[in-house]
Image (cartoon, rainbow, N blue to C red; front, side, top):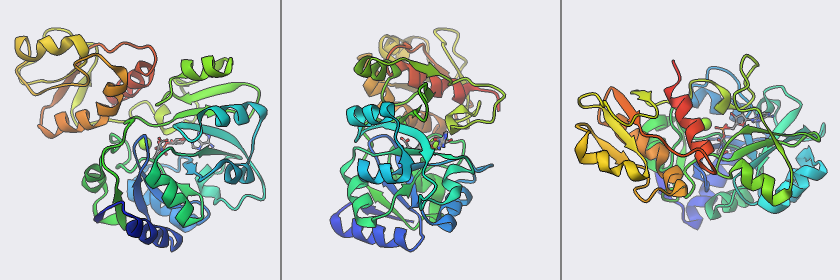
Length: 323
Ligand code: TXA
Ligand code: MG
């Protein structure tokens, strides 16, 4: 696979590849996405094949601006307010598809809804404008693995099956977008993400219904699969003592002191200063780094659950889920 610096020439080449039905990985403010022309069913299908996804989960469709989004789906008043406040940015809206929408049915996995997002990243937006089509783009990792926050992660996971990776350096948020189903009066948070639920609630004076742990039901967001975002090593949560010999440790803030005191294995602190934004940005790269040491177990110290901590803990609970 070609990893190419995201200069203007490379972006127009990537747009040409996308319009011809090829896959291109590109940076967004959250994680790297594996992009395909969302109106081309064959291209969308090759996303599933490339990721090795066990089933056809619906995919997020990325758009260059709100007017494109309005042509693809019906915006409720609530959806319009969320988009006004948070687009461009890492909030994805699930809305009812317009029947005349040119999107492939596969992006919705047969549902009558579609997930739309307008990314806040210069490369992603230039690419969307150059391609002139909406782009379906799940995170550019092997299915079930941690999401990529560097171009190199995409290469490690997907190798030659991707035509091109646009390298825009490390992603700034490091955790995926928050997904809100705004297709009805009830606003349901389907996936915690880069924008904390509380921030959306306080900005708009609305109440979000949390449906993150919906069990039994067919998952509608890949984050709802119990085991997901999983490294190879087994993950143990909320560990503060009794680390196994050689066990890797993923720490946060004050647990820096464990580095030399209690830990014999590899050690990464997501944010020595205890900042949740920094921790989210470092999360997936840290899991990959600890996994790459060959440690068979990763112990995670407690991480506060408020604000962005909600999404961080959600990802870690899934990484620790039985597989
Ligand atoms: O930050 C992000 O959102 C990244 C970057 C690349 O933009 N994308 C991403 O896509 O995380 P993906 O496919 O890994 O996760 C999106 C999830 C899917 O698992 C899917 O189940 C859910 O959004 N989704 C898509 N369409 C949906 C729909 N119509 N109803 C409910 N959930 C939907
Ligand atoms: Mg993903």
